[in-house]
Length: 329
Image 1: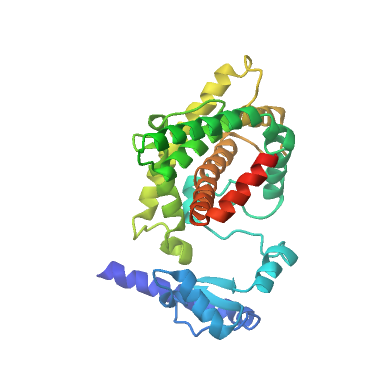
Image 2 (image 1 turned 120 degrees about the horizontal axis):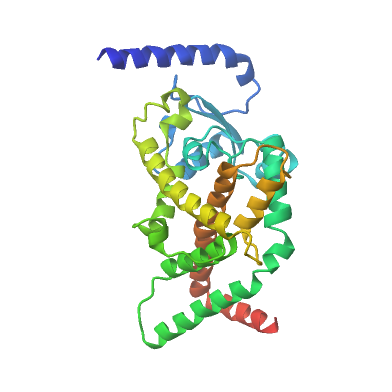
């Protein structure tokens, strides 16, 4: 009981100090709903926060201020507002807040997605753009991508003839896993190479925990306590990925001199050894970037492809139009 009261006292003290330091700054914020002490506006968000924010925006305007715990937040809910945030004033909003999941999964937010905006992020972005994601580099994997897609199409045709039920979501994710591993690591890896749960389950856990409401994100002083058990799960996932990526880097170290066609790992190892990066570039940075590429390709790309195919199935006329365009290529 004493421990609980101590937490309450600390929380109230932190909130009071926060209010004193930010009272002038808050006057410059856009309009927003009335909040509660400490919680801010968290109590107004339910299981579908995007819908709750939409309802609030209808009342308070397209640019709205809400406070999520101790985190001041601006919500842009119209096309014009989004354009101002993401394009016109993107340099002002480009920074990333403290994110508990990325602290554990991305080696202290050293990845491209959640790195703090500044010299480090600009250098990482330049390295990725010039060395990893250039047109020449992407084009060098064209034949491999074509081969993998053709294998999937032939497999789907056979299963269609045999009238077999297909889990298209799993097949698309498997395709993206093969493409990503071949481009980034130089070869395919089976599920068991990562963990007994497999790529799909692990990636889904990462995406779920990264997006799950975490008290440590809204109240940073609670991060170390891990009241929800999210940090423990994040550490377990981090260990799985770290062991997998360490194994891959070690394999590349031993085979580095004999390889003619270099994958992404080889390229980053060359950067690390050459000192080309304008900061201390070590294995942690390599693993953070590799983590980004794995998750982005195996979740974001797979989800987009799945929804595109879903909509094409729902709209046969659009499918026919697309087929005609593809034949012209």
